[in-house]
Length: 397
Image (cartoon, rainbow, N blue to C red):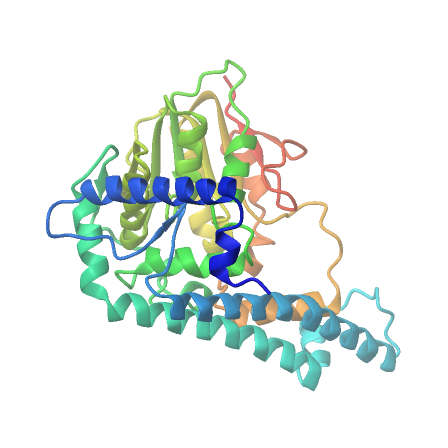
């Protein structure tokens, strides 16, 4: 049986490769640390696009909760789904009968197997957030000093607006994240690591955002000089778009000051010239016809119908003739009829995960809003993210 020392030491070639790899990481970390003013420090270890947690204990707990979430969504979820089918059969209801959501909830809400699935999923979410909150708030001075140092650095710029009037639709704890996106100084930190758990290991290095950026359509004339990511969160799509279009002026805006502040920190660490600003999607403050591409990443299901309509109207104003508007979000058209268990899960997500606006998003007529604003809408291609909706709009030239 080989121990770690033996394993790492197998063969001269492997030894050289390992030394080279970690030597490169040390040089990279040193270069990053040197970029920060004297007296400040980076409290986290670096791995590609994702900063490691400050300690192994927290990382192990979060990895366990992510694995538990994967099981709850997988084996336990399938068991609960099968149990729902059994309940319908016992009531003489065909499995493909399109019940109303209220009827599905009433049928399924008291079953112990389905309740265990709900409780397991919710508990994993709650424990994940509590661990992250404890880490970042418990070490506030270290994390704040890191952000404060990055605030003053480039290459991109950061604009915060403490007087911004926040819309009502963001004044709740989305995904039961402590403080939501606007009520905690560490909203960006918690969102980053929390959504890593949501993606169950598929987006540790922004793979889904990079893929979406690489699939983004461009205007027919081929000109991409200015890009805007609305509701940019921690800047994952904006940074990926800058990587694809290095010569473009890229902006990310979000109502959450802590979100754009963390996004700016990430752009500084990676040396990407992206501008982040705390602004409203309904009132971006940019000139008419300014952007070649305006996009958003899974944002509109967190926005009220009124806010959605206002943001689509604003997009029409700031996209230049011939430019692209592509708000990526959940699939709306052509989706299969929802099962009783699927409707129950949708209610559970709305009720216990603070997805306040998702159910209205599915019925608010976003494609019609986009057409009514004056865009030509293509709902067939391209698909930015597998399994999500296609809303590829062009402003008539």
